[in-house]
Image (cartoon, rainbow over all chains, first blue to last red; front, side):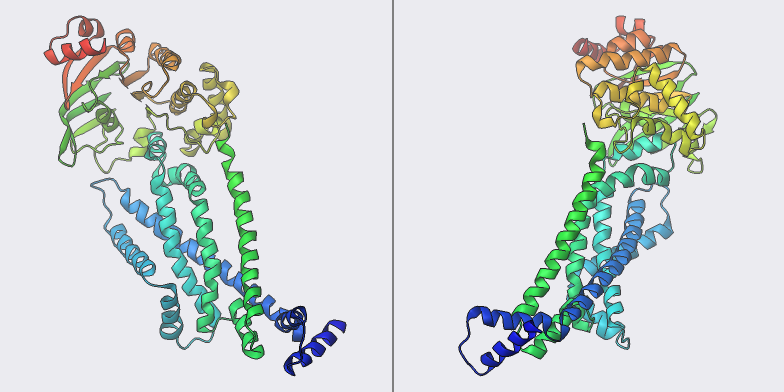
Length: 257
Length: 240
């Protein structure tokens, strides 16, 4: 193939310290980073893993976040004199969870999970998913709780004064409005999660950074693999932001005057 | 109908209601007036337990609703409430605002509730707004919808918490008209308001509250013509 021919030719010149132009050098490095030995498939595999990890961690994070947020909000909104001891206990556990996760670096959590808690597991990617999900859950919980608390208490009162119970009022009145309010911060959290998947490479998870680092080790060239990786993340985030914008626009329907 | 005995409510150290005892009979239109901070809104909000009393009992139709074991939702379904700031649900159309509670509490099917909503909307002349969202309405329209929303549950008593205080002056009339109509139909009403004209015209009894006490009460003619306490005299001089 012609592309490969020029790569071999100019690479030979480069290695024997012959003078070549900057664009010839650019071509050699680019080909080496992405095309030689079909290396682009390694990036592609990395991207697929990254997306999977993000999606799974997202589900886990939202699930944990919703549960923690509901427990904490329900606990704070109890009628005085009708405090539930069990709910108080669960609320305490939730508070510890949020405090510990938010108070320690993601990297440390990843290392603890990978090398202490699951030190015998070989499925590094799944350990990574678990860590990311647990981490994300704490932030999502605080975002949701903030959204629920920020809503005008009059909305809950209006629902309750009509004779609706707490959960029906939550389902039809509070949560739909709170969801719209927290969507920007939730989107932000998801973008952070997407980028934080790169951290699972430190415990051996095979995502995008892992692929790039493998190629760097083999070629002794880091510029193109890293720039390429940055580009891929940027494109993924842009696509996500665009989707988020569309959803926000759709939810703003009832704001029109 | 509503029997309040020795009702006290404090927020922290601040005593808002001080040992109130009051009885509201079916068909009565009780108007509560008083300076701000006198506890009149808190009194009203205690009646359907939006505020939990610190002590005392409230009995509605023979049920002691201050008992923690009472299913408060079932009681509230019989007591409509209208708020100062309307508190319509901005995420739903007007039709959904009205039909949500009757349908969710299984009092009506969606079709029945829709029919009822249309009948009520026609009554307040807002049928054309059924598919609009609350943010598209004026304040007066919102408050009329809020009244209709409460009426859709077919309550036995209606509680009004300063229903016209957040309205532009020119919109007060349309809301008061709906309330007057409701009064003439015989609805039991408890109204916290600053509208002295409404109190005089519609009220069957006027209560004057100050610093957590009901200082004076009378039928409206006598109440406004011959106030007894000095506090009420000076209050009426300022507002009339």
